[in-house]
View 1 (tube, rainbow, N blue to C red):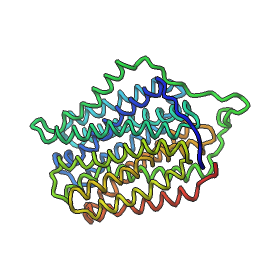
View 2: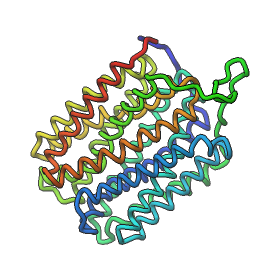
View 3: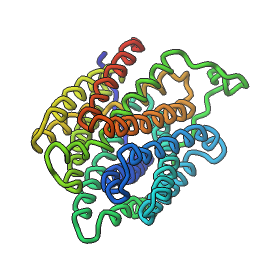
View 4: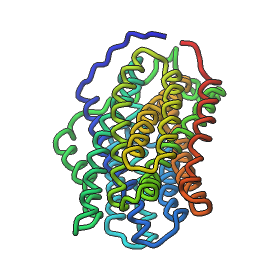
Length: 389
């Protein structure tokens, strides 16, 4: 269905865009660090994958607390407090040289960072109404650009005498700079519906979510599992298949993120014309094609091309999946975002861990067959739960 919707980018919108960019410097910085951290600690792939599980468990905890936090403190406070806690976790990883400290750092950063992230998404969805899907996609595109710069800087620093840990200070510096420049910009609060349209749960009862909401959650889980499996293990497979050093293989994430940036800017345009479910289904086919190219490749150029194509497909899956959950939530954006963070947390934790465990038993190359299985489940759910709009 062709929809003619326009986007207006005001100061609160740009603030959220840049806050999301600081979130991306943490997310992709720790993702790039994982193979190097595994080598430094001398642990198996499954044990290293527990860092992703820690991020996921933190995200689930944040999601459970999110509705209560926004009601008690407001969206603005929750976002800035979340970014502060996220940086505390990153610093714990930067200064920690033992597994308990790094696991705690990943978990704390995941909890606080995801809480801030999902409040940001709810703000954009409410603030832009029908253009919410496009704005969320565009915001994530800005974040991916920050991620590209972070992973590139990470690979450069990792190959220098200073080692990889100084690169983890990028999120801290970015957050401080943004707070100084735009800390006074006000974040739009949670909208209060008029009494005639008030959600049932606001008047004392809890209206159950429909089946489409839960199916949308499963689809989001699969999509996030795919993204995080690539984030945390694509560099490992790239190194094994091409012979690149772990530090240089981190540039594979830059190729994937370049595809994601292009896809999210393009996806923002598509979301102005087509329903999120339709965009999501198309993206899953692109992801499958990119995975096949990367998985079959043995040379760096072919693998880079596969990662870029995979990133192009992955790019819109989180924005469209999250938008779809908000759409079918019955007018409860904060609650839907909280639930989405739980589904996404399960996906971000289980995907890398399962792939890492399979990699220990069967090799990383064979373990990456998990991707087409997840694509199939996500595509089936997205197709089954589509609504006419």
